[in-house]
Length: 155
Image (cartoon, rainbow, N blue to C red; front, side, top):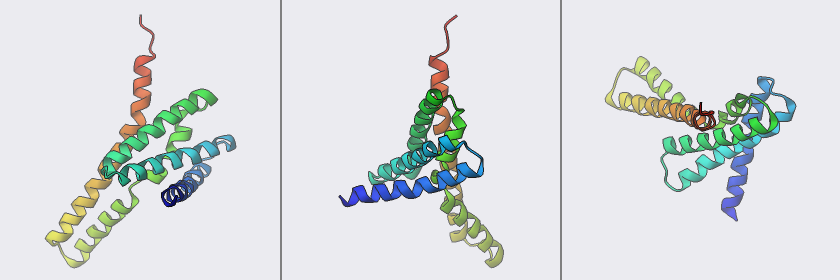
């Protein structure tokens, strides 16, 4: 019961930034609930996969692929462009901590001087942030690429 409560809390708190980001970019009011569900689906999927010791990069790729599939279904069902759902839904998946830590390490190298530990931490966090961002991009693009490939009429 405790793990279910944790998943529900994660889903609720990941839906909030998705809706907030959607509101900033004037997403139609009828689509806000789907943006909230998309953010909750993506973050909860990544959290669940990481509970099973899947690396964060692969978990983010799989979660963003699932968000892309769900958003593709919603966009066809409600005749709304797919980015209306996907862009707001992936906001909880962004690697803010890794990017922030990488920039802090870079600033520390500037202020205190270069040390092997700071270089290692800067490269580690920076590469992890770049790989996670790439996983989000590929995961969102993959479902629509497959759909375009297999729904094209044969001439």
